[in-house]
Length: 187
Image 1: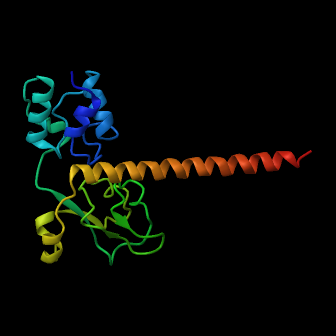
Image 2: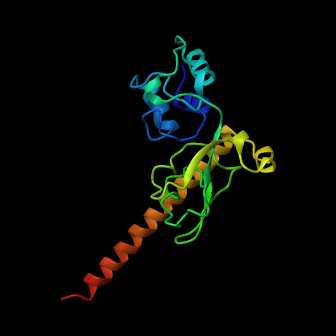
Image 3: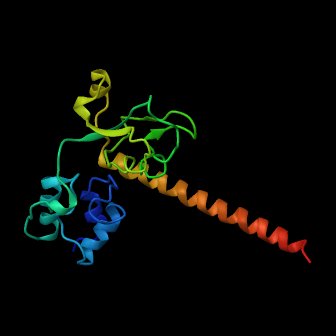
């Protein structure tokens, strides 16, 4: 019988949340638990639906339009002249494909961008747009920047998640130290 790992291996690992879940693994778990259908992954499209159907012995379903549509591979592109350096696009990127710092211009590392679109909504100046990989302004970049593989996406997402957990733990340790230090010397 197929498990969560088997389903997760078939998903594109964009972590885009268009399926209605926080990422590919939670979506895989929802499929196992009977809470989600196999047709909720727009980045995976028909190929992923067919692979999931074969794995699980289910009928192939059309992509659920409520989750979006499948299309060409896309990549985020930042209008660097319009970017104000707010850094709001950095945390939602599940593969750390955006490079920049507070109050400095940001740029997308095209070869790492998985096209999840999670950076678009937080941008307060709408300087991020999604473009087809084949339509990048610089054709040399487009030719050199093939889409990251599923395994690349998985590895980068796991590293991103580990960094976020470590930052959270470090912040909690610091707060605990400050709290214990302030109460130790108090009245």
